[in-house]
Length: 357
Ligand code: HSE
Image 1 (cartoon, protein in one colour):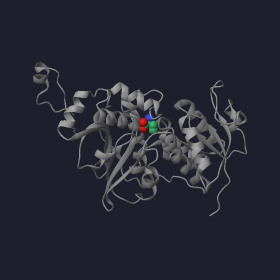
Image 2 (cartoon, protein in one colour; image 1 turned 60 degrees about the horizontal axis):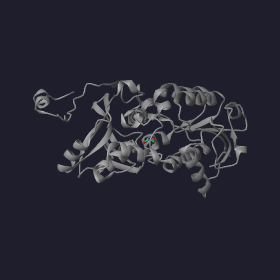
Image 3 (cartoon, helix red, strand yellow; image 1 turned 90 degrees about the vertical axis):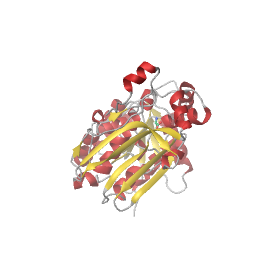
Image 4 (cartoon, protein in one colour; image 1 turned 90 degrees about the horizontal axis):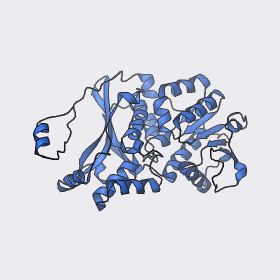
């Protein structure tokens, strides 16, 4: 198979951008040239010569010699503008931007078709875990019953520190930020948005439904206290933030993101720190478990590199489950039991016996 020689124009040089640079520099087999990097901040000191950098997006978007755009910026609206212009200009794109993909999913799928270009985004969900490619290629004909897991490294890191070391929520979150796991606005992590965006992207490939993120119920870990962790520990459980998508009947799926108690006999129990885990249950393959680093520059950079490499031999997502139309409905009408913590006897009386839906 012949590989196309790639000339890459990159947007953003933050944690993931620098991670990608390192990963690309140490890659023995595959080589690609990052010829231009567009950044916003003119004052920041950079690790590589300034001649690589530009502050004008058109220097990349209108350069006909650049055949691949790698988008790694933080701002989802600006990212959508860059990605859609690049695609209109006939350039293939690799992105790690889950907010952008989840919010414009259907439109981005249609644009690939319309402009005959490819958009790859393995790094957007589960970072180093190649879950999207697996859903596309391995599970393309499988009857997938459900998929669940841990898709946010920051919350898992925070919960792990609280559980193992009794560290306070705020201190643990600061540590996750320092290590480059958290979003610039960590509310996206701790409130469950980030996991939800990733779940929506995965759902597109697992079931062929492009959900509006607003449709999906989510609840984060920002209300979890030391008391809850202690309660879990006493019962031999851990608390994890778990996104779930699964079938409720032949044509219908449901999905949600919730903190859940996990017992020690479950795969997710040992998925700690910034690691992510994904469990699929399918008719023929049965149960499978994937695990890997879910956040951080190098882990995410490795997924971006894998997309860049796939791009060089013309790989594109075919959205097979969408083409097959396996699932047609989405429902939120699904019962879940939740644990309620009460602070005093009055609250206990109020809540006792209530099962929340
Ligand atoms: N903030 C994200 C996380 C980064 O913690 O999982 C990787 O998408």
